[in-house]
Amino acid sequence: MSELETAIQQWLDEVVIGLDLCPFAAAPHRRGQVRIALCQPPDEDRLTDALLAELERLAATDAAEMETTLLAIDGLLADFDDYLRYVDFAELLLHQYGWEGEFQIASFHPAYVFADTAADDPANLTNRSPCPILHLIREASLSRVLARHPDPDAIPAANIRRVRALSPAERARLFPYLLG
Image (tube, rainbow, N blue to C red):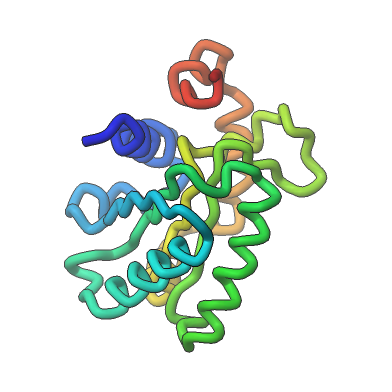
């Protein structure tokens, strides 16, 4: 396993699941249904090829075998604005290929900054990851788990409170890739 793959696994285990930022991630992760696909595309055309291949793989695989995919991008889209532009393009691809309503994309990036939020606001940690990641989610699965959650609308605010409450030492331990 590469250093980046180890960092992604640690982020998933300790941040996403460990801090319960996604209350729906633990069960599929425990069952081995979360695919981490690391790609090192030389350009956005090859990234698009990788994205389409992962969407096709997800569409062709039963959710009981693979629930979701984290497409981790190594060496491309380090600039957050470039990444956001690509996320918009990826959303258009979902529509163009008829996957709108079947899949959605959640976005994570080492420099993630929410609109109207200062870059150093700890709230941004909820979407900061070791590398740019496109999280490919099955809409049907998401709808099922959201229907069972007592208050899905409260999740983002609870996550922000949780990461803002972290001490500087906890932030350094959980987000070592942000210190470099």
